[in-house]
Image 1: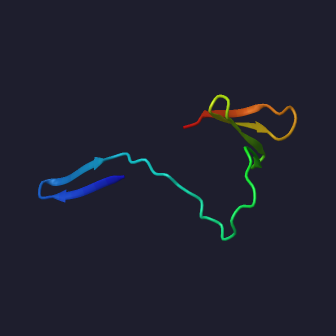
Image 2 (image 1 turned 30 degrees about the vertical axis):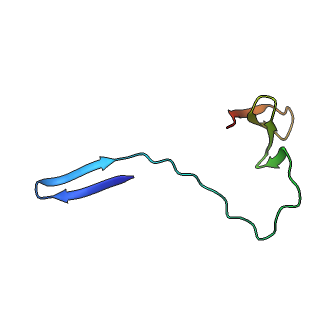
Image 3 (image 1 turned 60 degrees about the vertical axis):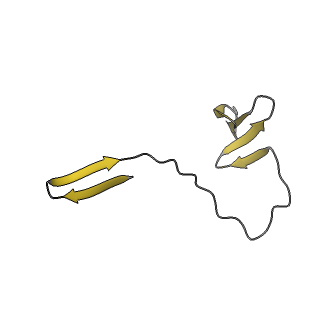
Length: 72
């Protein structure tokens, strides 16, 4: 976010970083099931409850790990 303020002497400018959380629009129909594994966008995403991470692998051979992130 950048805020610009015009003053009698000129322009004062400052900036500030603000975290923003983005959520998808809820569906009109409630989910009928849940899973710790899901396929989306050419990758398989899995929740690793044993080490509190989320990982993604390719959904085609050789099924390599694409990324892993720590959970909260």
